[in-house]
Amino acid sequence: MNVSETNKRSLYVCVGCEKLGISANGCKVVLEEDGTEIDEDELLQEFVGSTLMLLQPDDKWSSASAQSKQPQPAVMAAGHKTTHEGTEDSL
Image (cartoon, rainbow, N blue to C red; front, side, top):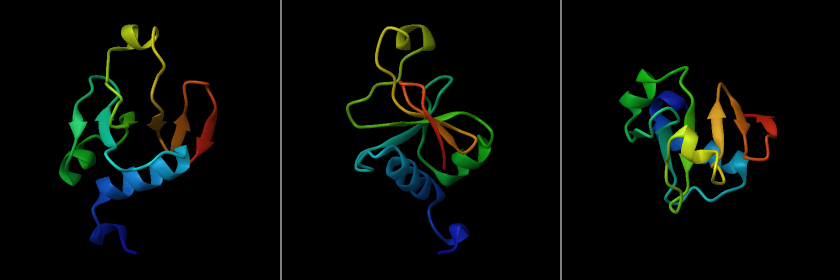
């Protein structure tokens, strides 16, 4: 499969969810810094190098100060994932 011929955002979601062991159904990609949803390939390309998060349907983005009080969704950055337990794995 040629990545340039497929929906890159969907591929990101599928690969990320598979690595995290979660269902891709209803997952969305958001910027970690402010929760902006990345719902188009063009937007994904604008944020190369930014930390992105995969949110499951029941997850809600919140600021870093509020997240310290709640379980955190998985974060993906630069080809690595970090879970709220602090483990890291290559994508």
